[in-house]
Length: 210
Image 1 (tube, helix red, strand yellow):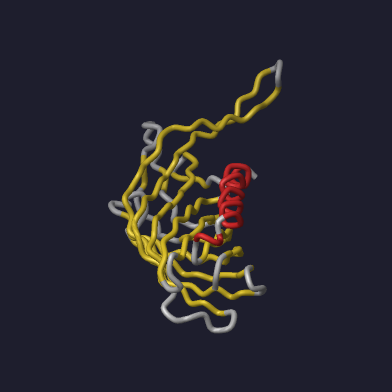
Image 2 (tube, helix red, strand yellow):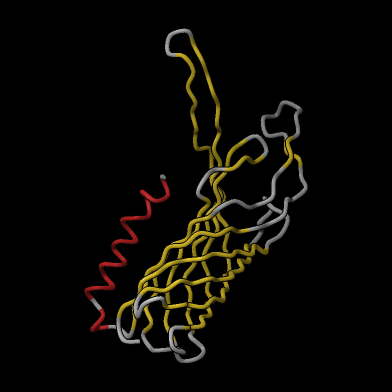
């Protein structure tokens, strides 16, 4: 998938950095996960093509991929970044769209590691991006039928992010992390609320002292 081709080099860079740097850091981690983000429809109908045909706006949903990394410079305090995007484009009032969220966070492990269980809290700021595409099919007698998917425009919004999850270590360095996140997106008028909850399940690797 295009998402994996775009993100795999970045994820490998995080992992290689984690392996070469553990002596200098309390802990480095990288992760990749899947989940969904949700918002209701704005309830509007838009005359997208100025032809008198008003098209309904959808709610936000679908399968999202999330990847990121963090640096714990103390056992209980660190910082990190993550990026989340919908795997596939979805219909939006006659167009297609792809939503993405990115954020930079302070990370707190509020209690010491209990065996292989590490509760985690996150909070930070970032942005939300909606990219819109026009998808059409055309045919002729010479080449047959083909489909084009043309990028039209994007809409960017400031967001505040918070998250709560727990790392469940299956080995000393490999963990699974279920997490609940919430994004407050400024002026998210394309949907029905500025509040966007998100749930995900990630797998990650951590290095350094634990």
